[in-house]
Length: 519
Ligand code: SIN
Image (cartoon, protein in one colour):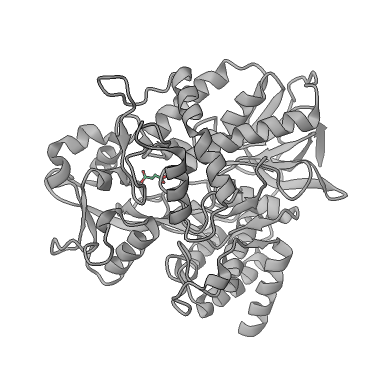
């Protein structure tokens, strides 16, 4: 196996967390590794809503933190919520200074969208639904002008190297398959996204299938809150994979959720109706689809013909699918959107293994609890990217001189078998999705074990490791809370109002018991 050594900090990922950290580390040399070029294939670029930040004079970081804690259903780390929300204004000003064209009013103030479970309009946006794209364009331009960053696109993380419990580097392969290459480095920052693509219905870009979290877990890192997966209630049911998003900001503007008879089914289910917490709305949309009542988003009364110009990404997705949001409704489905769980970190972004940091959706910092507050994801990525960069710099001391690394992939290796990936997604969709129960979770774990025994390609194992952790943590949490809904334990149990932590070894023990039971 080829082994290379660099004094560059290795960053896995090319989304908001990864690029922000690389910029914050500059001029310290960085090697950024991802399957796609910076900004492409990253969930951040697909984010429509924007960044939550208390920018209005009548709002406050304290109110934002309180909403974050309330939405998180009893398991948010309040100190982390205070830290992140307090830093929000500064990050918005930083992105503005870099050139992000946030929507502004006549007086120069930020135009703010309202999203579910926020007590105020608080989401800083760009042209309705363009925030993720335009923030990433701005950051990619800044990255292009930063010579300390070497970018290696077209490469996939398949493992994390350790020596005596310390992270010493990463194992990578060409994205389309190759012999592995080990890159040894003084520090590794994982910012490689979440797990949405482990389910058949997802709003995440196609390659995001839990690989970053799984690689860290395979190396022994602790994973927190794996059972908490957020399903977005209004993915557009277009039949595409992944499903396009219809941003929650549409409901913030007054769009309704209706069934095939035009009945607003959220009224009567929650006092906030369409702006109820995301898990509540997702379960309602899921139930409507299960019952064959064709849930749909009706933007006509709220937005009329202006929807196409005010929400161009939604309009484009509708046009692709032959849906007319001006003349009719937009069919919707609940889809895996955001993993609250991930690599457990502290407030500096340190993982449980020395030498490893994590930020963005791959990390679980304690901000989101059991149910992430809308538009807190980009904010968390910004805040923790900076925290990780500062801590890595402080840990490593003065920046070294580090020439660009010459990496060539040789043929060989084993790519993940598409049929095994499809089966894994089916299992997660059937048994570990919006509604779960002990029987289904045990079945899922037993099926993942069977799949793994037949498919041990590293690029598959990173996915199946994360799937195992989600199902095992979901089985161990014998209650319903936020995004984790157990039909066999429908109540919230105050005694379980704490975050979960699990290693892959623990999850594999649970899985082995299930495999024995179902054998
Ligand atoms: C949305 O625009 O609905 C998604 C925002 C988010 O997931 O934070």
